[in-house]
Length: 289
Ligand code: ADP
Ligand code: MG
Image 1 (cartoon, rainbow, N blue to C red):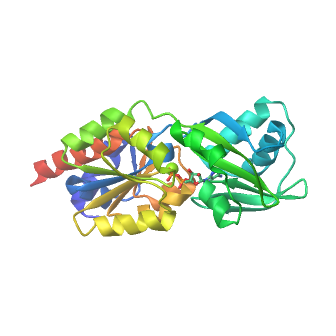
Image 2: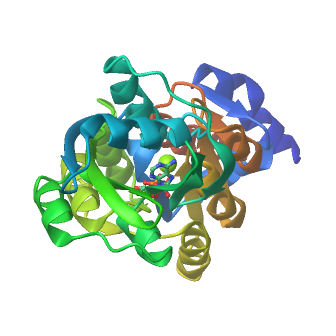
Image 3: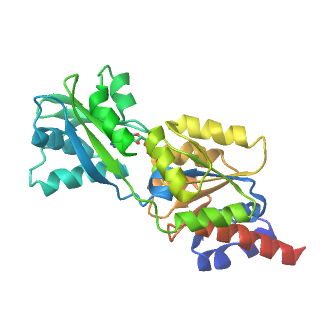
């Protein structure tokens, strides 16, 4: 690290709620042109709740929730906890899942009670050869809910509608970032309808939905042709994009994989700390020059 970087670094960063792993990154924060933000767990609280359960014909709600939650109890994805919470609230014991495979940005597959279970985005089920009927899906999308579809042995069991509220600080933070001249772009693996709702609530004009982890990194690379790009994320799915960015921020409550991939960690889980980092960097470097 350069002497400047060290000065901008640790002490002031800590006071601003930023854990500094790479002091030079904090120095680079001065001239961020674009901030790429993840949605789930970054703009939103990452404590989603299941608001609707729609079962396919002949499927019991308890069966749907038990099979889904048995798989999801192995996952660290924020949506997974919502599924486990609603199943547990019903008082059901959750059997152990075997042969579990997590597919980043898509969902989880595994064996529960001897059945081959899939839980994840409707696209994930379709990729695995399971049709998701529009009559199960459309009403949830119309409400701006995130759909999580569930299948067993190649047939859809139902779709859950999940909502994850915006962090109370996100909207003001986006406004501050814009005032600092930063272009804010949201990238999410979520469905476009749910993405549009959160972007509107946060005051973000530019977003892309259904972006897979590799797609987030590619989008960061493309934006870097236009200027210095920072990325902020919380999930395993964000790690490639964090690594691709000029300056990377992880949400402190996020996954270890994201924190290890990032230059800086937002201890308060608050996007306002990114604005603080930019202001801090500008103020400190201004004084030195
Ligand atoms: P974001 O980019 O908004 O943080 P992710 O890329 O982590 O979202 O997830 C994208 C989508 O993948 C989710 O909206 C969901 O449909 C699906 N998904 C990924 N993991 C899981 C899981 N464990 N359970 C259910 N759905 C999942
Ligand atoms: Mg996320």
